[in-house]
Image 1 (cartoon, rainbow, N blue to C red):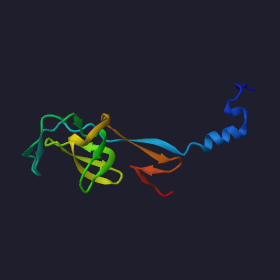
Image 2 (cartoon, rainbow, N blue to C red):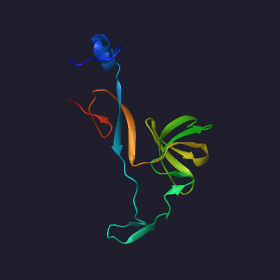
Image 3 (cartoon, helix red, strand yellow):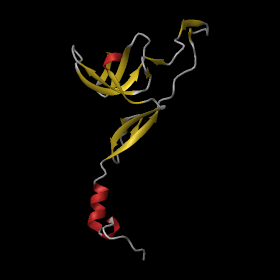
Image 4 (cartoon, helix red, strand yellow):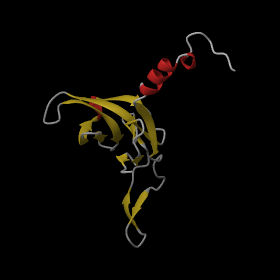
Length: 136
């Protein structure tokens, strides 16, 4: 029989059950990509239609960054946390669990740089596909 250290959860079944029951959420990751290298938007025949920006970072932010926005005034006033889509004008789009809003780069604070993945917490044992619950 294997010996455990004093106070180890395997020593007492009650502590082991409390340890397992305490895990109520798990962190999940979904691949979101790192962007596209394409510098034009083609039409349906493949000819260039638009000229895209040559840089991926605007006002210190890149698409996919996790940010917190503190919007002081207006219809969308409040604190929002989510993934940002950048625009060259500085009026970025923030996607949060509550929805999507446009927010100025002045109201954003970087929480985590984009690394090609989107992170979320989900209830332990819940089956999900692309962030949506799946019925068993």
